[in-house]
Length: 174
Image (tube, rainbow, N blue to C red; front, side, top):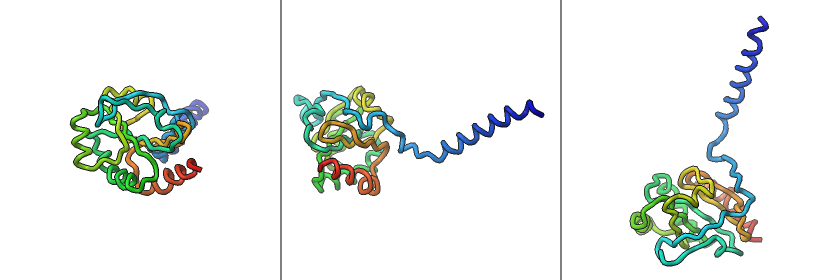
């Protein structure tokens, strides 16, 4: 009888871990980058490939970095939210065009509207790796000192924007 107690206890423990894990939201994966300086990079600007951008150019501003691609179905879902946010003029929105073709990205922005102050090209995905991108879209709120304060995995929604990102951005601007 005692020889069954240890396997039974291990089985119950594993079921407990599984039950807890199933209740977690995969979009709430904690990022080790939150609270740390945004990784530095220098990339060409999508609409002006002869010009380059670095996150240091945004020092002193609270801004969003949105990772997107023309081939991304979920990016199309969140795009109207970004266009509406850009029209409000609350903060700069920069795009990181991830593993995309420049002509397709420009055509996509022309078709659906361009919410970005500028969009940079991460053709090989190396910068996405530095930012810990799981998949597109992802959005980062970066403070005036260049520190990542929030990471959204997956498409932005009105609730996430109004309940999490905008209140945090307004607090960071003070």
